[in-house]
Each structure stands twice: as structure tokens, then as C-alpha cells.
Length: 310
Image 1 (tube, rainbow, N blue to C red):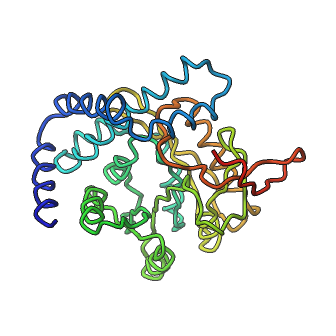
Image 2: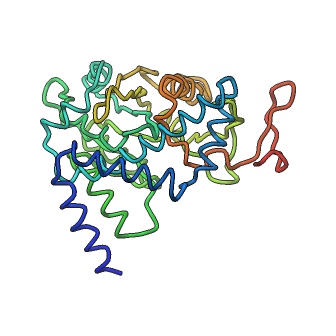
């Protein structure tokens, strides 16, 4: 299998040398295969979008489904392009607004938690290191939390891509240790957390109404931020045009330890809902986000109900 992975790596590097205008032709081919031929998770995508947007017509929902697969195909070639893309071109294609919200926290030696999501193209977001320059020349450690992949070769390949702009990758189980170490050594950290994933089975403590679904939430990010008294911001991403994205930094709190329980989590999902509703095809609908069967009672109480799973 090692030779197979090596061949894939060589091919990926060769493909990444092509300009994006050529890669988008390849993306169109991937879209055709994924949507029309293989139907990759198409039933899952269609069901999620139908349930999330019941107020839309069937035609409008099918349009979102089709555009999702276009975005998904673009995500694939754009991610591979990270192997060979200049900082200058990336800064032209991925822009940021209100970075001052992060810089103000860093200037006060506050560790920063960035709440992000699986909205395309999240793999380009670490290029924030090209833009963010805190005052005073303070040492700042940029990083993102990830769940290691089962395939060791692919895990290493993706970690290499995600380190392209100098940020570090923290395995989910070790992030607290790494952030404590950074603080002890006087390094302020700006760390991204993808908090839209489902919690581990058996660890459901907070269920909200998200995109018209009873949704169990991850609480680890909020609890870690509170423990370390971190400042929290949200990244509101939008696709400006093909191959061009913009992220606005939205302040959530300056000290998570001063917030109420679930306040940060609820705020995050409220902001994420607005991001998705603005451009519905941008979110990763193929992820089986609503795998755990919950429903709400008439009084709003969430109840585990295996009969409600589809």
C-alpha cells in the first residue's frame, strides 16, 4: 500500500502545480462523477437539506443540493492546491475582516479561541497567519484542533496541508496540555476549533434546535475556554466567488470564565445558523450530523427517541 500512497502523493503535487482556472475544470469533472454517477451520499445530503429548509420549494432545495456538490468538488481541488500556492495568491483569494478583534485580545496576553465550522473552504482559513500581526512583536502560536484520521498516511498528508502557513495542529485529546504549555512559556495562542461536529456517543448533555433539528452539541470547546479564561471569537465565512472567500471575525466574549453555562455554545450555533442560511450550499451537508435520535416535547424538553431516527 505504501507505493499506492506515494503515487497518490506524487500525483497530488503534480496536479497542484496547475493554475486554479485549470483545476476548476477538474472540479467540474469531480462534480459530475460525485453528483450524477456515484451519487456520493446524495440521499443523506438531500434529506438534511429537505429537513432543514421545509419552507423552500422542492426546486429550491434541489438547487442547493446541486450547488453543494459543486462546492464540494471545488473544496477538493482547492485543498490540493495548498501544496503549491504562494502566500500572495492566497491573500488575494482568502481575505479577513475585523482582525482587530483578535489583535486586541492578543495585545492583552489573552489566549484566543476561534470557533469555526465545516463551511467551504475551511482548509484555506489557516492563511490568517499571513494577515494577523499583533502589536509589540509578541510571540503568538497559531493552531487548529483536529481529529486524527485512521489512515496514518492520509493523516500525515492532511496535517502537512494544514501546516502550510505556519500554524500548528493539535490532536483533540492533547489540546489542553498544549495550550497550558504555551501559556507557561509566555506564548499567546490563537487556536481554531471546529465545533459543529456531533459529540461522542453517550456524552450528550446539551441539545438545541439547530437547522430545524434537535441537535446534541459539543461542549468541550466552551469548557476549555472557560477553564483557561480565553477570549472567544467566531469566524463568519462566505464565498464571494469561485476561488474567493472572506471571513469576518465576530467577537463572542473576552473572558469565557465570566459567561453562563451553554452561553458560548448557544451563541456559536446561532451565528453558524446565520452563516448557513445566507449561503446554504456552503456547509458540509454530507456529514451525518444528526445521527443521534432526539426530538423535542411540547414544552421544548429534548428526549432521546430511537423511533425518530431516519
